Structures are given as structure tokens and as C-alpha cells.
Length: 200
Length: 200
DNA sequence: TACCTTTGTTTAACACTGTTAAATAATTTA
DNA sequence: TAAATTATTTAACAGTGTTAAACAAAGGTA
Image (cartoon, rainbow over all chains, first blue to last red):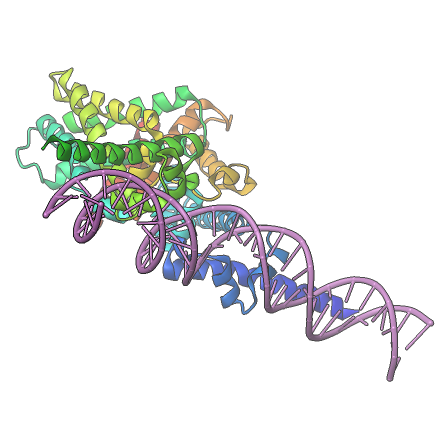
């Protein structure tokens, strides 16, 4: 009875097709363009068929998230394998993490909730968005005793600060609750660390 | 002709009411629950009225974003005002930033694209999500010569790494393009910095 | 082959979304 | 009071995720 197997294989194939189609649509047109009917179009079925394979749209996204984590893990492992010393391994791994994020931008957004959701493009052109930036760079300039506010050095330091604080914030907002203590610790350590690296 | 003024004042008031209603709905039911008709319900009008005040839903979000930046800026300025030394000012400001994020979670999400959008709650319960974590903590444990993988020290270091890398990644994914050079610089600096702080 | 049952697939519908045009109600102006 | 202007709503469009019912195709059994 190989026919049963053949059918199972076909079913597995359209399951994969659904996931592939979803990701392709997102890559081509962005997250907000993803719809069940569009997926159905690509796999040349009608929308309700998808519910034979996934219980909801969220289930599809969850499966893509899972694939994302597996892919990331593979690349981390591979990066680690290239070195012997832990310090070197660690650096290579974070670089691999970095590269994964940009090579698989859509998956990364899904996994870690970085949304170009609503009006993030717009808010780039928002004058008010520059206010915090100018406040910070001014003080950093004071600290470094540099006049030129747009100096690359200030910019770099600012990004270092911002990255670590924003990273910590968003990790927490997304509900990956590490303990309150650890957060405070990380925050304080990081801030004083960067400040020291400036004044030293 | 004070009646014109009165009408203008009323119009300004419903404009504010719309923004308030939107934010309240989001605070109560989350971003995904926000709809024009729901806003209309709260301000006791029908949906099309809103388009007399805002050209689109995105325009409402943009206005909220603007308010968010202004509020954040105010608090940064206030924090700065409490100290004289730049180093102290800087620390106070980043702490204010941190506090703003959690006190105004919804606004922060809007401003910086931290979405609890799709399946971020779900992905917490995803086994695969622990894979990268265990890979990293293992190496950090090696580096620190600590056996106990769940040690708080390792956890702290891991969060420090993750925060800065994730922060830098998401800032870039959201299109706040700083130059490629600066990014690489920040990334390398930060990683080696934390590694040094471990081995030292 | 003929029938019945199971499986696969589609059509139609529901309740919702943002948004717009037309119709109606209220108010101001002449 | 009548006309004109403004305020507000109703109805509609095209889209969304999702479900139930209708239909088509295949398989098994007699």
C-alpha cells in the first residue's frame, strides 16, 4: 500500500509549501501583506484548505518562528565549531547571531518582535524623534569634552548606550522575564561600563 | 464672535479625546484590539467622524508617537537637571529612559517597534527558543570556568551580550540607518568589552 | 459495474477591519 | 422663514481570519 505513503508525502509537501509561500510573501511584500488568501493563491488552492494543515494563521507564524530558532541554533553551533578558545567562540557566535538577523530579517522580526508594524517608517521623519538623540549626544559630548556634536565618536558611544538599554527593555517588554535584580544589575553594569570606557 | 472659538475648542477637545481613547484601548486590550470603530464607541461618535480629525489610523498612531517622544524628552531633561557632572547626568538619563519604557509601555512599543504582535507570547513556550540560550550560556560558562549553567552570573553576562546585540540589530532593522562602519564598531567594541570584563 | 463511504476541495457566509461617498440631520446665515 | 453650510450617520466597498455547508473525487465493497 505505497499509495498511502505517497499521499502522506504529498500532504507533507503542501505543508512545506504553505510555510514557504508565507515566508516568500513576507519577503516580497512585508508582514502586513501576509494573508491566508494570498498564501492560498501561491500554493494554488483556496484559503480553507490551509486550515487542514494549520489551525490558524498564528500557527503558521509559530511554525516559522520554530524554524527560525532551529536555523539560528545551527549557525551558532557552526560558528562555535570554528574555534577552540571560549573567548573566540563567543565572539564568533555573536557575529553569527548578527549575521543571521540580517540574512533572515523577516524571521528575526518574527522571533524577537521587531515590528515595522505601524508607523515606524513614518516616525523616522518625525522631528521629535531627534530630541532624545540630541539630549544624549550633548551630554556625551560634555563628558568626552568634544565640541562637535556630530562627531562619529559621540555617535558610536550613543549607539552603544542605546543598543544595550533598548535591547534590555525590549527583551523585557516581550515578556522574557528574567528577574528584576538581574535586569537592574545588567543595566547598571552596562551604563557604568560604557561611561568608564569614555572617561578612562 | 466667541462661538467660533467655542467650536474650535470643542474640535480640539474631541481631537484629544480620540488620542486618549486610542491609548486607553491599547492599554486595556492591547495594540491588536485597536480599531477605528472602537475609538468611535468610546468618544460616542461613529467611525467616519474620526477622519475629520485624522487622515488615517496611521496618522493617529503617528500623533501618539510624537507625544511619546515629547514625554520622553521631558523626562530626560528633568533627570539631567538633577545633576551637574556629565557622568552622573548620563546615568540618570538612561535610568529615566528605562523607567519611561515601563511606565509607558504602549508608547514605547509604538515608538521603537517592540511588538507583541503575532506570536511572541506563544514563542515563549517554544522549546526551540531555549536552544540559542543554552548554546551561549554553555560557552560563557566555559569562559568563566563555572560549572553551574544556571548561575546568575552567567545569566547576567548573557543578558548583557544579548541586550546589546539585539538592541543594535533591532535599531538597524527599524531603519534608523547609522553607517555600517559605526555598527561594526559598536558591535565589536561591545562584545570584546564584555568578554574582557569576564576574563579580567 | 453500481453503490456507499470517505476524503479532498470549493463556495458562501459571518463578523470583523480601514476607508469613502452619499444621505440625512442640525445649525448658521441671509 | 428659506437657503446654505456644517455636522453626523448610514451604507457600501474591498479586504481580513475563520467556519459550515455544498460539492466533487476517489476508494472500498458487493
